[in-house]
Amino acid sequence: MKKLFPLLLLFLAQINYCQTYTVLDSLQKSPISYATISFGNGNGTFADGDGSFQFSKKWYPDIDSLYISALGHKELALSTKALPKQILLVQNIAELKEVYITAEKKRKYKIRKLASEVHNDYFKCWLPTVESEIAVLFPRNSAKSTKIASVYLPIKTESSNRNSSKSQSFSTLFKMQFYSNAANFPGKRLPYEDIIFKVSEKDKSNFELNVSEYKIFVPKDGIFVSIQVLGYADKTGKLQQTKKYSEIETKRGIVKVSTTFRPLLPFTDKINDYKTFTRRIFFKNRTWQRFDREYSKNNNLIKNNNTNYGMGLKLHVFEEK
Image (cartoon, rainbow, N blue to C red; front, side, top):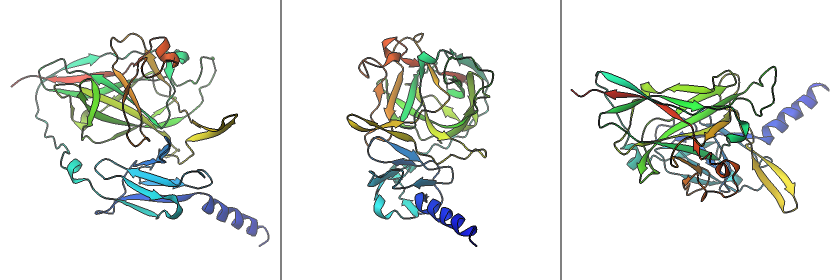
């Protein structure tokens, strides 16, 4: 009993340290996968595939409100003083009406590839963090019906340029989304299903994500394809619930530094125009910004004209009847 008592205290301490909450649809009572949990200060986290997330005042002592949101549901603000174990989100009927149901016709098509730009230079890479979403514009260069078959994502698995005999292992979950083109800015979220995918150190530098089963057609004005990091995955592929930023004490006080995740994302100066946009998704207005000198005068990528993420596409361009 004397040996079991300290273990019991440790177990109880872990329970009190971090509580688990679940985000559910208010009507169906079904889990909402990968819901966004914003802290209202530019930081936040995500629910996992089962709609669960962890929150603790010891992890986040200065957070007094959470803003829970998900596609097709109204955002909900809650006080952290009395969070319910089950958080119910109300459906947004206006968004739900726009869900696409596509019956794809069997037609002949030609494959067209928009090449990605891949390199291995650490100093020309974006360091992914969970609060940022990156979107790249792709115009539709054909009047014919065009479907996205694959997305090519340049990645760099090493965290530096130092040669090593063995790569450090990692497994990172990403979410891919699609937006309309509104005067060359990301516009309305297109009501396609979120695509959750995993990248590890074993993947090639030109990572190919096959999305043909999702039936994503490029609008006449073009389409924005976006990716954002959800966090590291455990051995079973489930999203790990860990603190997404560190607190560093400076002369100006405590500064919150977002955790960076591998793989790194190579940016390039070989793409004409500014086709890459980014936004901080945990801010309530979530405003998109073009990645150019107006975005930042001090960003080293921008200083060296590496202003575009080198994403590419494989397209199916369908023949007319």
